[in-house]
Length: 154
Image (cartoon, rainbow, N blue to C red; front, side, top):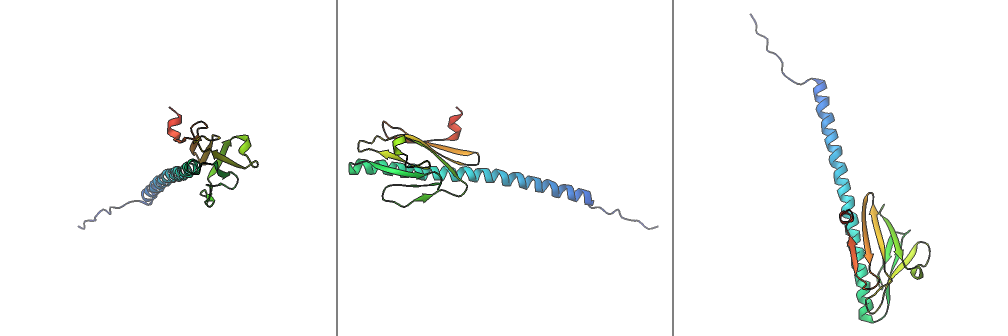
């Protein structure tokens, strides 16, 4: 009498089911990482813009004359006095709200700082997908503050 051993293994259907689950998990991880990267890019660009605004305010105080940071919304770029244009990462959007007197055109405006530290005030929003960061400039004090999107919901 011969004994036959039962062959153990996986069926094609079982293998396909496992591959499909792995693909689904990888897709979810990729989407989550992509959203996190978008948020990091907007946060980094916001910090750079805040530094440029604070630099401009400092220059106005030190030089004792008004200084302005130029913002080109359509070109998605900005320029501090005496510096080169800084372009935002691709696909990032920008919005500007400032004094009417500081608007050169529909898409180009300025945030002006005065020797006493005050400014024309306004705000700039940077967004990439659903990640949005708002930079507010106080007209009276010239203080530049970044509003974290998480803080808006509180």
